Amino acid sequence: MSDVRSSERRRELGGFLRAQRERAAPSSAGLVAARRRRTPGLRREEVAELSGLSTTWYTWIEQGRDVSVSPSALGRLARALRLDRAQRRYLFELAGKRDPDPGAGDADEVPATAGSCVAAITAPAYILDRSWNARSWNAPAARLFVGWLDARSTGDAERNLLRFIFLAPGARSLICDWERRARRVVAEFRAHCGAHLDNAALRRLIDELRHRSPHFAQMWEQHGVLGREGGERTFNHPRDGFLRFEQMTFELSGHSDVKLTILVPATSGAAAP
Image (cartoon, rainbow, N blue to C red; front, side):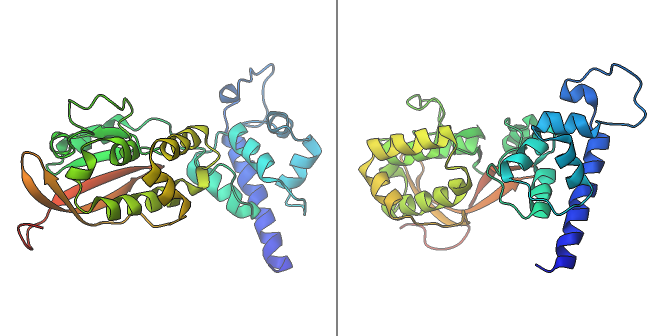
């Protein structure tokens, strides 16, 4: 990167931090104003203290000086300034660093309105969180996914998609061409959680599946990586017979690790496998 480009990025980084500092409410950082503030937001020394940096070092960053800031320090700055996901990503891009926790800044809970949207969809639809636990689903999805989303499914309190595919007794008979689909799901999951492999919950899930399912263990060790894409999905349903759908997956705005999947009934093609 040229010296001119680097200088521009440092100035932009300093200006961005200064703007966020001035917008931050002292009360949100647990600070009680002891005296009248001449400027809005937080003071430089307050941000520095909250981030575990020296005031001089933080001041140099705001001034756009040629100083190196570690990813961990950037993460502390993001937390101190209460940056959301988009702001945090922008901070790391300006600094030219890789975010060690790219999921930080996301809301932990799925918005209540998302569940209402799923209920209004007429086709089978469900929402998965970072660990691929079903957080919301509608009645058509509950009817389709026998053993996972239906009312009689009690073996997995979290209703995890991977546990259903690899551990539920009825998954192989429900999902057509189970082995091919299972292999693809594992590759999609690896691509999805690659940035979060240090997450304790994800590690526990992966370790559990490797221990309990030889098929998952074998597929996981193959290190396949695929994007979660749409396409045809077919099922041998115990009540409704052969079913064919086109799958579509969407990312919720502001919740990059939360995915909405819709299975639209196919209207053409053969009527049986």
